[in-house]
Image (cartoon, rainbow, N blue to C red; front, side):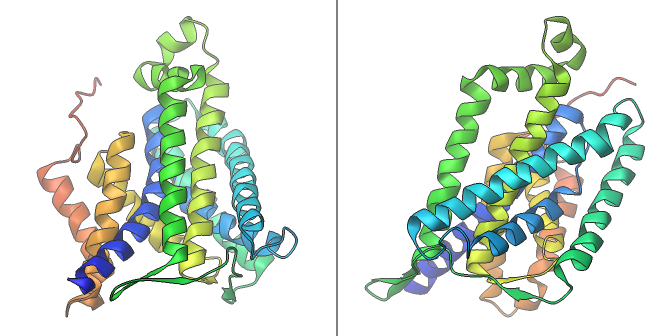
Length: 296
């Protein structure tokens, strides 16, 4: 029983990180109908921002750790807006395939630029918060895991509030439903799209910090595998569906963690992509998504 609870906590903390990344994918898809494959590398940039800012902002204390976290989110939000303005906005009226190829190109640019700027070797991520081991009988929980869960829940609640209780959130939902109609009623589509990229990239930056806290080794290619698994999570939950992305992230994290405790642990990465294939075959809309008829 104790081992089961331990795996459950590990899976939830990992799944919460996947959920934060998956929300970025699903928000951009909901507004623009394309997958921003550079999103996983924004996640990597967030980790490096935290790495360089930690000594300057007093990492090791609660306030210092929070300062690093929100600074990384702000930096990634700015990076997301720059990527949208320079790479995607000029292609707004081009084919989806053109934009998809561009997204892959931006991803490779960030990866290779990161290797040039930060160096190719892995680096040890500093401790952002005071770390302790909490014991509940035979169950041992790291304070970092609780921080990951608390921060993730807070960010998910804030995202729900922005999307459903603010004017910019209403504009995002209107643009997602019908871009032409949104512009006709006075919504500035360019501003809403930029905000969507900023918000999704900020969540990726938070995911990068939280991931580096629990797996404290960072490198310029670190975003590739978590990014792909988060994409699987977005598809699993229903691409374009925010609660679905969060649910998909948690499920992928739980499955991966429970698989790690079995003889099939060497296939833990393959399991995620097997889930993707099964979802595409039997429920393409995802667990919470709805089938849409596309007019051509």
